[in-house]
Image 1 (cartoon, rainbow, N blue to C red):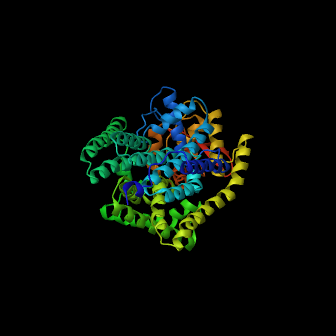
Image 2 (image 1 turned 30 degrees about the horizontal axis):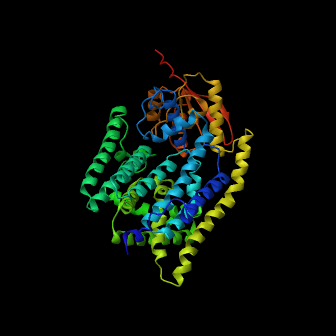
Image 3 (image 1 turned 45 degrees about the horizontal axis):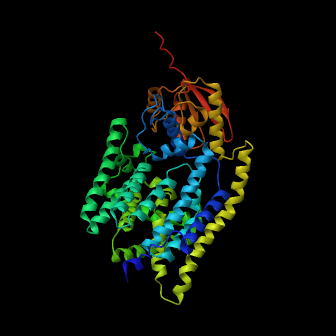
Length: 512
C-alpha cells in the first residue's frame, strides 16, 4: 500500500469529505450555543487572562493588575492575553466567549483534515463527529481559558507536520511555538516535532527546528527568571504533593512513579468517561469499562501506527500523556486531558476501522455512534438550563454558582464601600478584582495562624474576605481570625451562602 493511500490522501478542502468536516464544525457551533454559559468560569483563571488582556490593551504591560504593586506576570505565556487584548477593544466578555467557541469549532474541522492525512478518511470523520458533540470540548468552548486555543494549536501543528516540504515544517513549528505561547505544557508539541523528524532520519530539519524549540523554551525561562525570580518554577510546582497544601512537601523519584500510576488509573476510570459522557458520567462500573475500552483501543491504535512509522502525533501522545500523568493528583481533570482528545479519538478508531468483516463493517460506525449519542444526550439534558441561564443573565440576574454569586456580591460591596487603594486578601483575588476593582492577594496557605497574620501584614492587607468558595478559607484563614479576634472587625456579611468582609486592625499598643 502506498504512503498516500495509507494516509488517506490530500484531497481538496471542499468536496464530500470537506463539506462533511465543515458540517461537523457547524454542528459544534450550534450545540455550543445551546449549552453556552454567559457566566465566568468559577476557577479564577479566566479572570486572570482577562486582567492580563486589560493590562496589555491599556499599555501597562504584561502585569498582574490585581496584585499590590502590579508586578510583571510570569506564570501564563502571553498569547491568549494578547488575543483578549484585541477582542477587548471591540467587545466584552461575551465576545471573548464566542471566540473560544469558534476556536473549538475550528479544532473539529482541523481534526478531520489532519486525521485524513494521518489515519485515513473514515477514522478522521468519526473522530471529528465525536469531537463535535463532545461534552468537554463544548464546555470549554465558552470558557475564557487556554484550552480552546491550545488544543487548536496542537492539532494545527500536527496537521502541518504531515507536509513534506520545508515550508510545512516551518509552519508546523510556528503552530507549536503558538501552543507553547498559550500554555507551558505546549513544550510537549514543541519538543515532539524535532524528535519525530530525527527519528525519521531528517537530521537537518530536526536540527533547525530543535534550535527553534530551544530558543522558545530558553526565552520564556529567561523572562520568568528576570520578571519573577522568587516565583516557584514549573518543576517545583510539578513535584509538590499538593499545590494547595505546601506543607505537604514534594514527592521524590519513587513517589513520582507512584503518582503516575495513581493518575493513570484516575484518568482511565474517571476522567476519560467524564470526558465523553459529561460531568458525573464516569461514575460506576459502566464508566470504568468505557475508560478501559477507550484506553485499550488507543494503545492498540498507537501500536499500529508506531509499527508503521513513528511520527509527530505518536511522539506527542507519549510526551503529553507522560506530563499529565506526573502532575499533582489534584490537577487530574478533563481540562488537562482535552488537548490530547483529538489524537486519542483518532488512535482509538484505528483498530476499530481495521476489524474484519462482517462485524467490523457495522461496528466501526456503531461504536462512535453510541458514544456520540451520550454527547447529544448530555446536550439535551444540559441545554434547557443553560438557555434559561442565558435569558436570566440578559435580564440582569446572573446564574453563577451560589458560593461564587455570594463572593461577587461581596466584591461589589467592596467596590462601593472601601477606599480605591484598599488591599483585600481573599481566596479568589483575580475574580474579586474583576468585580471589585480592588487589589489583593491570596492569603497564606498555612495552618499556623501567626504565619497567616505575618503574610497578611506583609501583603499590606486592609481587609480579608471569608468566602464559601473554597475549603482552604476554613482551613487557613478562619483559624487565624479566631486566634486574633482583636485584629478583625466585621464590616460586611451578605449573600447565600454568606460571605463576610473583615477589616484588619492594627495591633493594640502595649501598655507601659
